[in-house]
Image 1 (cartoon, helix red, strand yellow):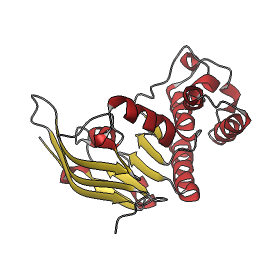
Image 2 (cartoon, rainbow, N blue to C red):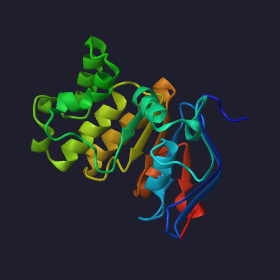
Image 3 (cartoon, rainbow, N blue to C red):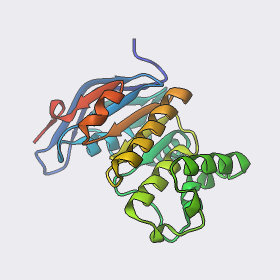
Length: 222
């Protein structure tokens, strides 16, 4: 039986308009507290599947359920509200606001929800110290290196303690030591809080650390 609090995908189909590229996922399950790695070469559909799982793309057919919520049945605004409340996202391009400080970027999920208080700030300080970016809290993101920006994006994804975390190549701009810190933190967070973690990676050395691995060659066709 699939975990009703986890991630469940059934008969998922998606194709870009006017493009031969397709993603077809007959079944995918991830229990709460478990971590899944999405592996495969560039262009294999890893980021596309991540966007389908988070409701940023709508499947042509099939179902994506995050806990009790069927994402593909929600309106655009309902999906956005669900992401703000329950999903942590690390985008490949970070999706940070350059004109805001590190603190302001990290606390954006709380700002949108109107609950920027002491617990949120305490969580932010803990995350940024562990990610070695605590000294940059008052700097604008535009002043940071790519690796520093990537770690800010990771902190923002975790600060509101979401039930589901999706990370698209969160170590791509980091050296091996800092990359390992990020992956260890994401895995620890999933297992301690019972979160579902889905992470896209090109690094085969990371795959043994995950509970499950999906290779996109099995799901995507050109």
